[in-house]
Length: 316
Image (tube, rainbow, N blue to C red; front, side):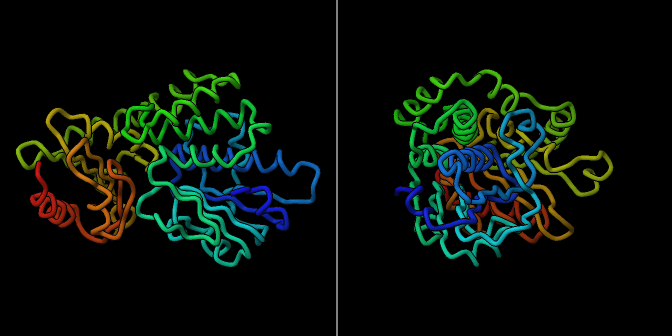
């Protein structure tokens, strides 16, 4: 797809990702927005990025100021949705559905058909950021855009260790590095470094986690009461699910926390034996083979029981 040609007749262009944006959502959306602004520089096009506020770890990186979390002030002619389907984009969904042209860029297998008038979908891609890179004319690439594409790839590949990391992925990374990006800074500050509260929260959840199925499944959770008593916010859960996943002997890790009084957010990770995208799909969710999630109305006990019943059918 020639995205510049497709957008040539659109004056008001919006870019969005999913709710609770992660590194790939943030990186791919910012990179696309900055690229389009450069490509259409000098024209009358209004190009905006509507996205929920980025976690604090991204706020020192040039380009993050591009994010507009108001979702207000414009009805787009064209809407580019990246790394998700419309029902997970939050406040932008109504704007997306009213746009004359919709473009959906995604790598989630659960969105294999796409949700736009034009769809760029590749479940084999390491990240949405990799797909965004593929749509760019390299003459517009600069250090800032390259940094955000790099961050998107880093976060969705677990710093290049997940199976989705391909030779093509690393070739793209090599090209991005030619723009002079600060790889160590970007990885350390956004992926590995944790606030004191994040470390304490992770320790609390791991300490109270439970093993099932002879230690092959681990479940961590936290209650609304604990979150209120200790001042814990959803950003403080960064890294929890991955810490649970790397427990010796564990094949599937589960982490859940309350979104409100009735709904739980459930994250799933696996090592090699379980397709957690299929598992999440049983609850109306989705994601990737090794990383997925869903929202569910029910107690921790009910969700755990239902998940274990499904996992009993797996060859663990």
